[in-house]
Length: 126
Image 1 (spheres, rainbow, N blue to C red):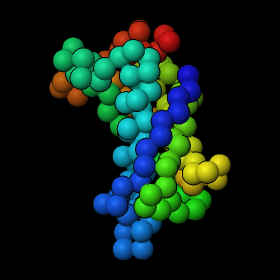
Image 2: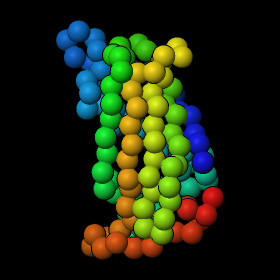
Image 3: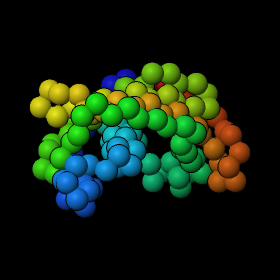
Image 4: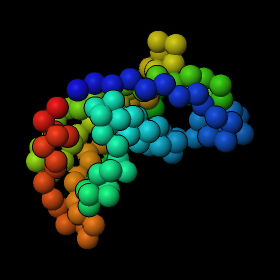
């Protein structure tokens, strides 16, 4: 599955030079994952109410050029692999057709106590 999400860079996400601070890309990736889940017809809050926690196991980013205050980021999210207990995503952040950053994440499914649990079929089966 693939999904595209757009977000404007806000002033507080930038440093003194108006450039997006590198840590914000992980927030953008999370926003994109939540929006992808919504596009699939699921609400993350409902999953948590059911005792399903999707937690970051690992995450990385590679930066190609700076994004700046006022830029409209297009975040392309793709499910690379889904197993019974985790989902691997790949991300591309683009501004006006130019690649800004790329990233990957692995999301694990756990219960409220942090024990690994089976991913709901309706999430990985789509």
